[in-house]
Amino acid sequence: MAGSIKSIFAGGALLLLAACAGVPATTPLPPPSLDAVEADLARDIAALADDSFGGRFPGTEGERKTRAWLIEKYAAIGLEPAVPSGPDGAREWTQSFTVVRRRPSEQPGASSARATRGGRSVDLSMGLIGVDGAQDAPGFADLPLVGLDPDVEDLRPRSLANRGLVLPASDLMRLGGQMTAAEPRAMIITSADQATFDGVASFLKRGRWQLDSDEGSPAILLLSPEASKKLTGLIGDTAKRKPDSAGVIAYDTILQGSIAQEVERIETANVVGRLPGKVEGSGAVLMLAHWDHLGDECRPPEAADRICNGAVDNASGLAVMTEAVRLAARQGQLDRDLIVLATSSEELGLLGAQAFVADPPVPLPTIAAAFNLDTMAIAPRGAPISVIGWGRTPLDPGIGIVADQLGRTLANADWQNAFLRRQDGWAFLSRDVPTVLVSSALADKDAFDRFMQGEYHGPADEFSTGIELGGAAEDTVLHAALLRYFGSLSKYPGARMK
Ligand SMILES: [Zn+2]
Image (tube, rainbow, N blue to C red):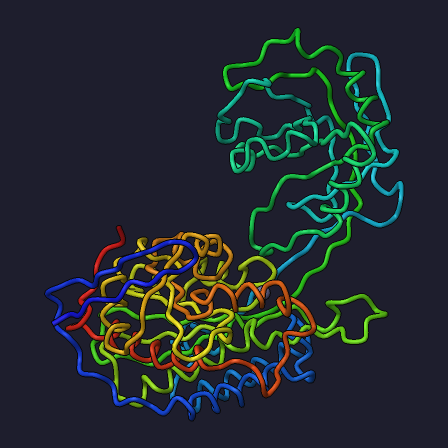
């Protein structure tokens, strides 16, 4: 018989959550000692957040040490390598990929651009800053410039392909994701004043990491206020020109130019293990946590402590993952395969998770349930749990049953949804893999807010004996039970995504 789950007040939202009736109850797990689990988590977090791991930035000695730590742990739990490494069925622990960041060159005057209309031409190079998400050494010859009808509300996919869109900086965010889908070859951003130019420039200078295998984003050329005036003067009165049916206005102007940028590439890897299930062809359950953090230069050179050790974010997720898998595995083989994934480059934009879903070692539709673990060591013992991704997968009733058996209460709140797209689980959920993040961390709003405003992404997120592991230990036991439940064909036969 399924029990009901108590309602609790959290984050200003009262959510009454009832578990499904009619699903057979499971035998309660012999409860592992929470003190022992806490001690194991503390040992693992202390190891991974040690200064010798250098803040676990991809491509560094810290990555080498983290991978070695994970592989040793995986092997001790009894996992086997999960990544196909050749035609002979051989498998390895690591799934390698390359990430790339392109940033505008710091050298003034290194980029150049010239616009021509009819017999006239203007030089736009002064103060120009550029970056190209698609190529390392981009250049433009006779790129036709266009504008958008100010009234346009919908951009047709590919309607800007092979053209350069001239756009005021104030309009940058207006059409959101539609701009990417319209696939302009370049965006020429004009700035009305120096403050606007500086604002966009500092954003571009940070650069953006992406998978090297991605097609990339358009080139962006940011024009100084002076150059902006020259270009709009050359194009002339745009109000007199008729847009085409897609809302695109041809400017009868072409652009020549080249962009100087700094390109950085890093080779890195996910670490993937597997515990084969009893029933071949019954799919898999997946548990994941990101291993990477911000490295040993996350503060300016003059700072006293420059290492962002990432004890909570996300040594705690790795510790909970390996401990939960160990506890689940020692109770016997699951029906389904269990895939254990430590992702790289989450902090650079969920890139390891994207690399996994782009080339998964098991077909994504065979993954019956996936659990992400991120930033776990926040709440004390007795805290409720929340589920990021609640209402989006067929996993909710089963999670309710398992939580109820362990005496955990559910406390979902609207504010937590802001994190849905900010965690690795999103790369899977957006590909229709039923994925959730179950954690006490986001259910204790006060403790979570304190962390986000304090240690988060800073040198103070390091291991100390005072680190709060009460909620994380209970979440470890819960995740071991979730793996048992969703790994069982009789308890969870599987269901389609909604
Ligand atoms: Zn982070």
